[in-house]
Image (cartoon, rainbow, N blue to C red):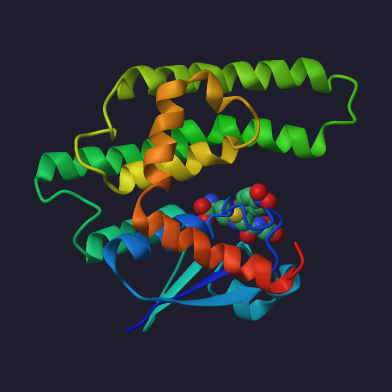
Length: 217
Ligand code: GTB
């Protein structure tokens, strides 16, 4: 059965692929699973019909037959578990790949999000500059640790996995901030992810949603 995912009808990122449907689209493209996309407005997301699938009224969701999922990490994990290609067969390598999935979402994404949220909603506070320095320092500490572990490897644990897929999408949230650029091997890592044909297909698909609603942009 063809799965259906949800995505922003009008993404605030203007087609930069920073919303969390991008990681689900990318996972589905990596495993060669065709899917449908239901675009939802901010109003529709909060309505009871959507909330039966997503208790927090957000995107992305994933529906396949009588299975309904929310949380991008859980959806990517489900896709990776139910198709070959995103998790290694070897049990230990598989466990390590899953560890990197959790690390991306639980250890690397939170400081990046804290910084991003501050730049969006705290700019007018008198303490903003001071707080931004603290938050950026936390991001740099985490990126430094990740950078040391990655070294000059292509991927976090031998072959590309769902762990890399999530980590690349998390690091992409720093796009345009100048923060990632201080860690050249992480920039190269993100570029390797973005160069994958599956990533490109997913990116083009989400971009087409933006260009369809902004034909002159
Ligand atoms: N933990 C959940 C998951 O991983 O699925 C978080 C889901 C989530 O935050 N969804 C956001 C959402 O639905 C979209 S991705 N927001 C609407 C709401 O809460 O009302 C977050 C996001 C939004 C916008 C940008 N951007 O413009 O760059 C980037 C990321």
